[in-house]
Image 1 (cartoon, rainbow, N blue to C red):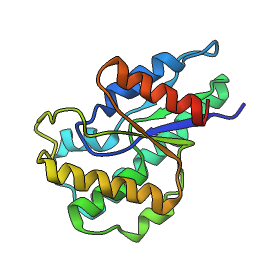
Image 2 (cartoon, one colour):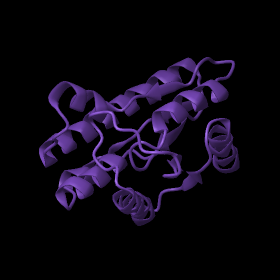
Image 3 (cartoon, rainbow, N blue to C red):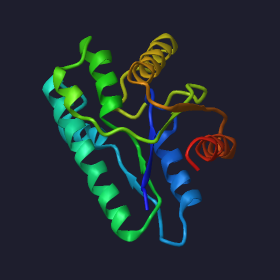
Amino acid sequence: MTVRTICLHGPESTGKTVLAAALSQHLSDAAGAVEVVGEFGREWCEANGSYTSMADLVMIAAEQERRITAAIARAEAAGRSWVICDTDAVMTAVWAEMLHGGQDPAFAQLTHTAALYLVPDIDLPWVEDGIRYFGQADIRRAFMERALAELDRRGLPYAMVRGQGEARVQSALAAVRGRVG
């Protein structure tokens, strides 16, 4: 059985973590629950502060990729169909651009990509949590443009997700069923 990965991609404060959990519930099957690979970068920032150097971002991306690879192996062993990633190295590369104006060449060595990227729109209100950076509307739009441009540059499949609450979950599920379901 092939394990398919879905990755949440895009600016902060768009409900990616909540959406990942909801998708996990909806996509669980007879083989069991869908594993969600959490956002290592958030863990790192909570432990070390929100400033991240380019070297930090490369390390965060590599650890995120390691965790995704391990989750896929566990899913394969258990006969599960899905792994959902709250983020991946592709998104961390976009963070490098936002924070440092470019990408370290090491990002090119991180090659895992998802079967589908779900990009929640910036149609939810910004929520400050002490770690987030870019709450201004114009910067959120610029962040979204960079996130989409990176997916386009790499030729990766993606779908926009819109709406609030259950409507957002249904938008994501429709994209999954239409693209990789």
